[in-house]
Image 1 (cartoon, each protein chain N blue to C red):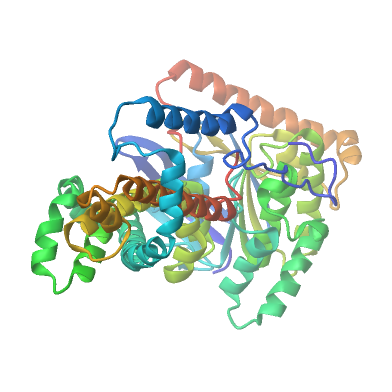
Image 2: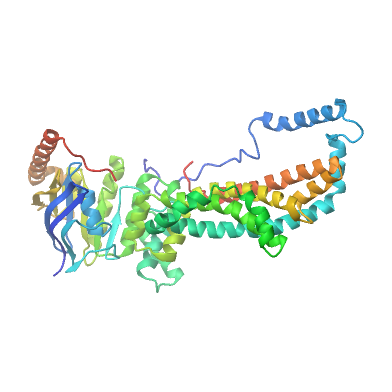
Length: 267
Length: 267
């Protein structure tokens, strides 16, 4: 059995249900965007897949093995606070390399780390500390570290959520490029609340409903790659999908406002 | 968080050490003013032939004359302070981080620490001198006790303050054991640890000099006590000034190390 299988997955914080009987099958090599309003448990879902948390019930399987704790099979990038501020970019990336490949010599770790930094456009900043560089550069560094881990499964939790639109577009292109270049292709779960971003990057868009979180729509994105923003904007399929998703989300948000009883607990 | 210069990272702003180079000249002016007040007090107060307030000139003369003795005293005092403080730093950090990062250890040890830590460490001095084989060992023990609790408590606080996002990142990277301690837990706890070290060093000096009053035959506290017994006030005041200077220099050294190691803390 390959890929990621989530079966009847539920998560509660105390009496409050966060995710309820969520089912999802993700074949290997797919880039899946996960969309949802606040309170839909997007981040909680990612924490479960990362093994950072255990579900209240249900199963998670990666390549047929249950996920019970974090493993090098799976790299994670959060919205911020991903890089350790007391380490340089190179040290941050090296950390991932020496973690998965302890046999590498120090010089080799350094060489490979610099390679990953060059890949994300940070070749000149390898000796810089995170506080010395901009937010966009920090997220590039975070991606470099996740790539360096070499994991077949990559989880991205609103990684570009705190960036300005220009940087965001740059980093989306970078992610798409590196993902397409990865052989074999990595399986990516990309959590976002930006519909355009979800469509631009995803092979598939999964929409989570709120309170409690569950899958309310699962759409495939039949737009050919490599994608360009301009071609996407000219494509009627893109606009149809976007409208469909926006409608679905609007219904969900209205439903949330009407019930207005629970909010996603802040991390 | 704009990302305008990808290849030329921002450099950290140049920092001036406001402690040593006060921007306001008043801070420097205070010293000559105090000296003048001292001079006037010693000159015009009717204090008799062996004044309790010797004039600055007489005091500095005594400081100069006692230089060899004070230097010997410094070495003797440091011989107590350094081992005591180093042991407190080592054990306080290791135990504090352990108790602060392991829930079970915290449940067992923190209530105990809350009871024992507030006991004024000076009350241990007579008992330590009675129970331990030599004055040196008992003085080191007393310095250790004085510095241990502030450092321990700051290490616990530092471990508790470790941001969940850093912890998640470390777990996702598979960092464990010694690597986790060295690369994540210890650096993250350092800001707290340094405030504990500052308090601990202050306590260490207090306890050192108090212990020396009890039974030493050398050392800074002993120097002051010895000349007080002979009513040699110039030397006594010289000893007080000198001890103040040594304490100040030690604190400044600690501050310099702090600034160096905590360069990454956002100012």
